[in-house]
Length: 370
Image 1 (cartoon, helix red, strand yellow):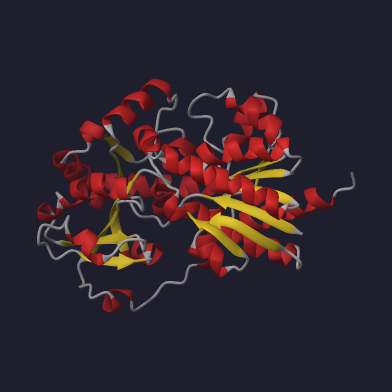
Image 2: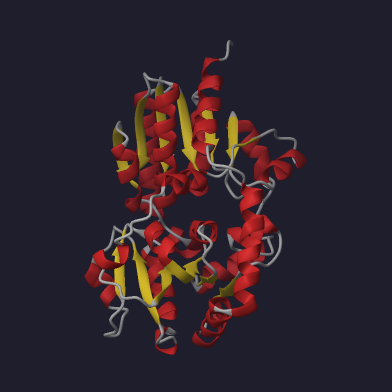
């Protein structure tokens, strides 16, 4: 069968690649065409557009890049019609993918949505639209099933695909040597993969380096940027960079400063105490505070439904507060409590196998008698 996948971010590329691998196991004749990235491309098929040309963060950034977004959307719609897939598989990326889902249903295509849009955060009535344009919804957060049920929509909880990726992880015993790292405990810096995130958060993260001379700070660098790009933020400090080795870094890390997003959950699943940081454009954040109806921004706190990790947002993202919270999780009761909470989180998340469960359900859906 022919599958058309749309992923617009680094995390979507990762989950899309794992899903493609699982689909090939379920359907030996699977053919793929997709918007995605390097990981999906490694699984075969035809990459139409790379996510690096699609990811824009925040209300302001979306408005400023609206022409590019609309151009990408038009190209995607035309390519889907030309390919005529047996099913369209949309992966997260709701601002783009909800429009694509609506278009696909108008043209009689089957639509599966893997990794539910976070519509529980704001404008929850969008569930009614999802019910009309999505045939099968696959959720990766435990609380989403009850949320959709309240709106009369049956969905599948398949577990979280991050567990699949972590289950495949193999520690590199030579990680420190290969990256010229010493014997000090490591504080991992995860400033995100988007240019806007990095430029807003990395300076804040690096501002506390001098206060922790007994630790080595290491940046998880995005492969889409060069070493010189990161150097501009370092102020001459000898900060190490590791490219495309985030899991190795987390495995060896003692604590972490993390940009809000998927990385907060990855960090928790690696049992690394963390402080979560977020900075957005002033207009974007102002609008978000008016419309977003959730108590937390980090996945860890959302899943646990209570504060497990500290969230430093906008004006709270200061050198003093980052330093104080980093110190609290580096030693003593604060660290012990967070690690205990992580154990509870792991139980809630369940086991690996999300990609396989999702692939099986997609193929079952496509092969059901009409």
